[in-house]
Image (cartoon, rainbow, N blue to C red):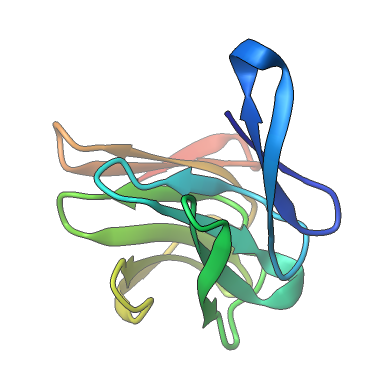
Length: 140
C-alpha cells in the first residue's frame, strides 16, 4: 500500500503485516500521486514546490523532478499509459496538461475549469473527465 502524507513523503506499507516498510522523501506535501502499472515509477504532484516528483518505488528514491514553471496548483493527476502521458490539471493558469512520461515535457494543453477537484482517464472511450468545484464536469 502507498500513502502520501506529511511535509513530503510517500509511505510504503505492508498491509498484511500492518507495517510501514519505507518512506520515499518528496520535495513537499504530495497531493495526487499515481503508480505506473507497467513499471516502477510513482508520479507525485508537489504543488508547494511547483513540481512533479518521479520516484522509483523499488529503490525508494526520487529519480526526477519536473518543474511546473508558471503553472501552479497541480492537484489532480491521472496516467494515460497507452499514450505514455501524465495528465495534470493546474489551477493557475486553469488548464489540463498532458506531459510525456519519459521526461515531463509538455505534449498538449487545454483550458480547464478553475477549481479542479479530480481527474479521471477513460481509456476505453479515449476521454478525460475533470470534476470541477463549480459543480460541473469538463470532458476532453
